[in-house]
Length: 105
Image 1 (spheres, rainbow, N blue to C red):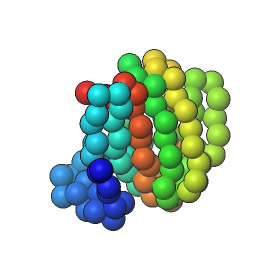
Image 2: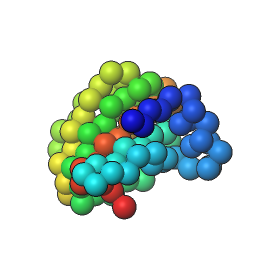
Image 3: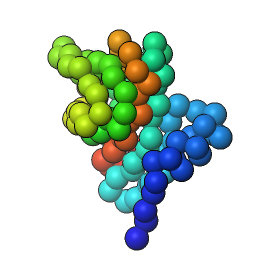
Image 4: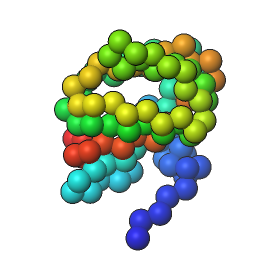
């Protein structure tokens, strides 16, 4: 079994000085913690993998293709491979679990 605590993952992400921390990489999926602070610009480009975002904390909006929705703690968003997407209008620091399938590089 592999088990993780969000507080520990956030501390590791900060120690590695990055917005994204991949903490699990398996044959069929990978999982990471993505952080965007209030007012930040999301630099993402479309990925080759399907993604699921689970918002752990914060508030903002996400656009996938031509559709936009607000997100907050508890929001779950699916992004198909190749779809343009971006978080924006971030009013409270976002912390997001990201699941890639197949696993991202």
